Length: 178
Image (cartoon, rainbow, N blue to C red):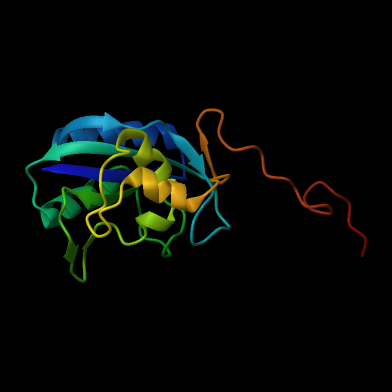
């Protein structure tokens, strides 16, 4: 079964964590068919946290969806993920984006990934490796969904990544008056 996984990291050695995750995915999930470039992205949801590195990979797996989810959670823990707030900082985040053309809605798992069509952090790397794949719910291509988003200034190839964030005047390093 062809699956597409989102991979993200915003704590520690982000690029090395993603490389380590890919090694574990190859060992525990199945044959890796394609891997996108790395992209530096602004955080989504909870925005007051470090930027992410994101990628997408395509694999062939024999694991059923629930088995795949459990294996992804094990890999996250193996590489140092600890429970935190929803959308908060994390060493590693592995998400099932697409599982062939399966549509699944359970309390534990939604396939296709519920938020993928609104997130440039997912669609930019996914469109790089699978532009003509059709979303099972919409029957439209990933390329078409990415085009719907318009400009994506919050996503940049890494390296070099996004430009440095501007420091607000009177912020760190600026004298303040009492």
